[in-house]
Length: 476
Ligand SMILES: [Zn+2]
Image 1 (tube, helix red, strand yellow):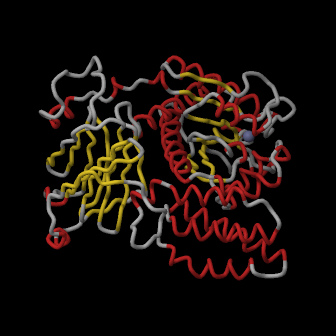
Image 2: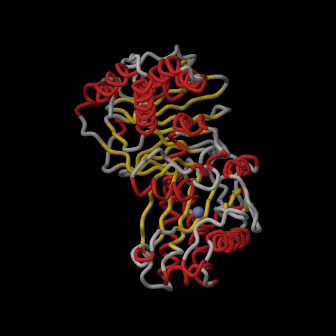
Image 3: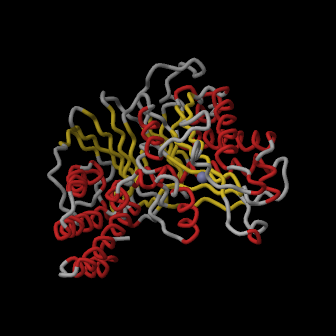
């Protein structure tokens, strides 16, 4: 969606913050916050900029600190995304320091290209020193335009594919032999691939059916790989690749966060069973399984101890964790409701305020929300990072799927409450993909009995471990 679609909302918010009544200004302020969030989620930089400007104006009127928003604008202006991906005609970005050192266009006549039908990018993968882009249909080499840019001592190999579309806003892939690959819609007709490397190399590319192969810089050859040149026969090498064996899990750090603890027992369920106990035993089982598979694992608490919410993510940041997994159990109030609510759901942090998310969040946030100051609560939206939300969303999907499949292999009637988004304070501040799993309702007579059964806990833990592994396989 383009910023224009929000022009009415922006105008309304602007009128609100120009008001003399503080309550009206606050309303406009919150409207700009949610517009900023939409801008982040949709990768719409114009909307982000307009919302940030509104937030700064509103902050001035409300006499609150606007540093965060000013910094966000600065970050927006110098963002590489703008230079590489924003259509320069529709957005005035800071002058780019990029300098084209060579330009090699395979087809200079854009008219012939635009007559071609638009292809759609379906899948991207990195395998055996190749970037592989899979499209919905076949295409000709006339659709590919290549150029090289140099920026801050780095080489950017740019491949424009046109006419083409992609459904994701921006995809980033990091690798050992290159700094980063970025793939995004550059303008309405062009998908742009940028391979950023610190040393120059000669990327080769070829089209095979619906797939485009681009060679990546070669690093040290791994033991299980053949030593012949990747350029020689990219296709057959890809077919022979064994995805599973090449996964090195020892480089991943996972922080498991058993909810509550100590004076905070969490929810108290059927027969006075306590949430803090069941989540700790499941967390320990997850730790043991992940360790056996090679992961580095830390728990935010390994005994019945109170840990403030913000210390939990701070711990994960300190450990430089790749994943933050908070484990909780759900509860519902009222005796007559206890049979009605059961099942598993996985949450990721977002400003979503659906009734259901609000209810669960209220339950999990209640422990020590006083721990977070009012400022943090009001502006946490502004520090939410769009890519982190997307990654957390993907992690949540893999976890939910694997937990269900593990439990359903042995148990009947396991209910899938899906992946949801919500404002969970425990996830605020995590610098890595972060999710909160509600492993079931301890208020449900049958489910709570299962939750305290060691075998059921083991299946739960295996599902969580499988979910993390599955995410890594999908996104490495
Ligand atoms: Zn909880």
